[in-house]
Length: 129
Image (cartoon, rainbow, N blue to C red; front, side):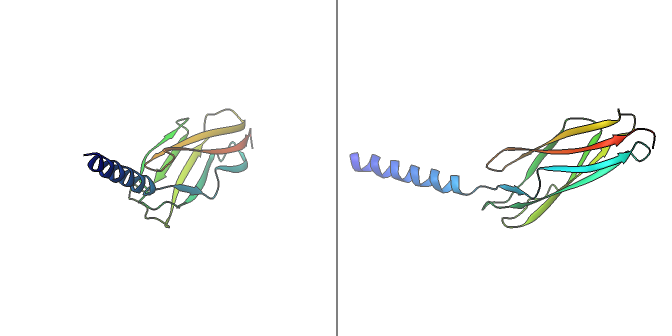
């Protein structure tokens, strides 16, 4: 009986370790993108965040949460295979916003080992140009 329980325990540990090793994981080229200084008359700026799935399971982006309605994300909802690259495009629209420095956050919710990853877009919008 003792051997039976020991065998079950070892099997459980093996399965747990094997499943823990099969996880997706992001590796972003940049966490923060600075779109520079731009005039209030041209308030729309785009940033593209490229990443690689460095894990050993398909990576799925479940949601992208932005800190402001002025920031619009665009991303592929299909799984990214291990070793493959993907991207998230973020458009900042400063129309009607205050001039000066801004920094907005973009939170990526996924099936990766680190469930939530935070990215940033920042820049400076100058008044009256």
